[in-house]
Length: 156
Image (cartoon, rainbow, N blue to C red; front, side):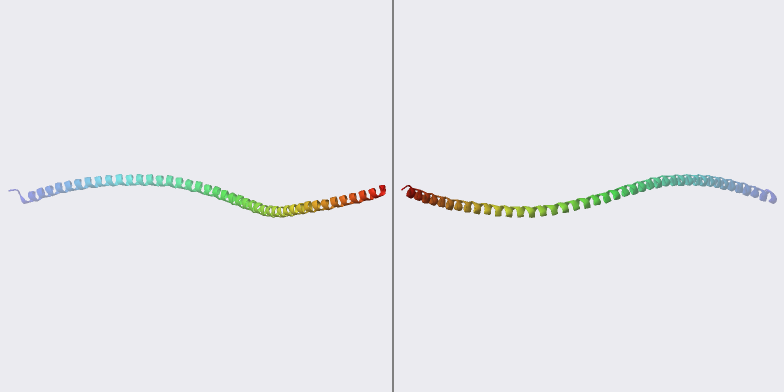
């Protein structure tokens, strides 16, 4: 048997070595956990920086797309204004041409009426002329008969 004071020391040594062993394990786990945490923080920081850079590039790309779209929209807006002006001009020209067509149709109708009227006058004049010529011819024949009759009487 060992003296009592030595047993307590041995227990103290066992307890001390176990405590030291637990402390070393805890310290190792803490160091591992700390290393892993630092690695995770570094990775998260790296991922966040990558994500921010990626988002910044995408934002720049979208900003450029918006700028291009706004420029294109402004250009199209100007084209629409020009097209509307051209349409209004062409519509006015069409309306003027329609007005001229209506005027010309009225003139043609008037000329056709006058042409029919002139044809009727020509026909009437031709008939009147023919009748007058016939009357005149008959009158001349009658005169010739009278002159011949008077001449024949005078010769007697």
